[in-house]
Image (cartoon, rainbow, N blue to C red; front, side, top):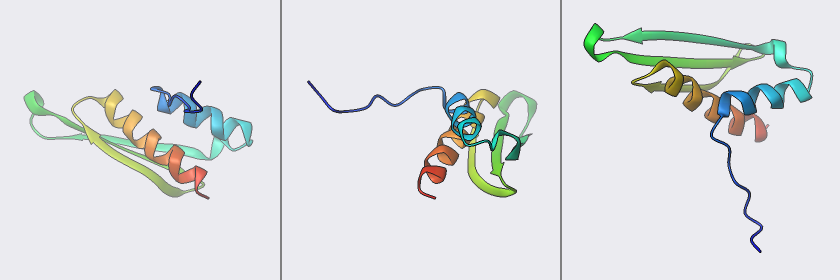
Length: 80
């Protein structure tokens, strides 16, 4: 039997749950914007917790950008 922990795919939900458990859900804000021509958009997501940037990611879809930024933020918060 393995002791490995399966990592989730839903990083936005994991980040929300992590902050909610600590009573800090209201301290999270997002900055989301897109760049490039309409046929080749790149989405950018930045997540802030307590007004400090904890995650940033760019991707071809809005959802992927948010998930990548949430993943970064989740692990950054675990290290604090």
